[in-house]
Amino acid sequence: MRAPEIELSLDDLRAVTSFATACATWVLPVFEAARGGDDRPRRAVDEATTTDASRLVHRLDGRLRT
Picture: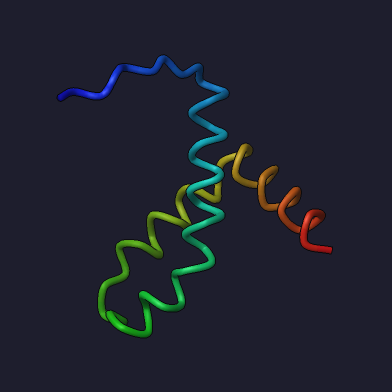
């Protein structure tokens, strides 16, 4: 069975990317401890965090944790 298609705006895609990046940031140390020679996840997260939307989510994440 195929999942239904969901249409996302560019803003929606930015939000999803930002959320995924924020989540990945938390688990990267675990991955790197187990597979330290594989830098692909770190490079992907670093690339995603250079977007404006990602910066916004990281700022909001900091506010929510304090």
